[in-house]
Image 1: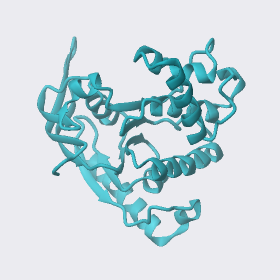
Image 2 (image 1 turned 45 degrees about the vertical axis):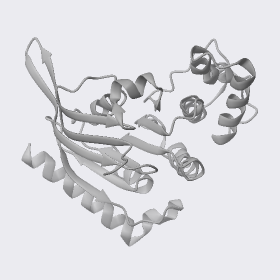
Image 3 (image 1 turned 180 degrees about the vertical axis):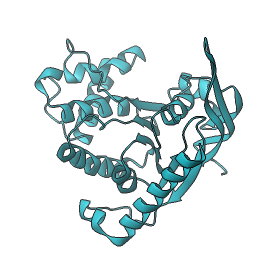
Length: 259
């Protein structure tokens, strides 16, 4: 894909261990364009998070090629080309919410006035305006994850990497955050890479769903979503939604049987 934000070709990653090599990824080829919302789904240990970490420059592939914003993943990391949201919010309890969001900006030596402006703007984006002086323990789990997203948005990277950010939350909170994430994506136009174990979540959020097979992690299917960009939760009851979910489930089953 010309001008792709992420371009992987024949990507492989093998870890050396005392028990022999572990093939985490094998022959992964994928292009992700600007403004896409791409979810990765598959069984535990299939390489979803490993692929995300390769894109982030936190793991070095052992074969193939990977470009992020037209440069190596390591150079993209140095250029701060992405924000990363982890499974746990990872907020420092001794810092206020505003202080947590400002921390990367402090490290990047943004002026104080600019840090304050960005903290205010990102808190408003995730519907946490007015909470900058609260501490993490004063917020619910869902609010903490929204603060974590705000921190990743603070330096305005065009690419957002999200590793099961809502996996530990109850279904009601998760539904609400899924809605808010779609609204945030629509407002910002950022490119989203999202790891999940939930079929309904992958189908609801994504423009494309990448189904991965068990180790060695490979892409077994890439599913284009015909759903409209604006998606109320009720769309999950539609025949189109159910059809996509069925295809994802079949792709997961086929990948397991082929492993």
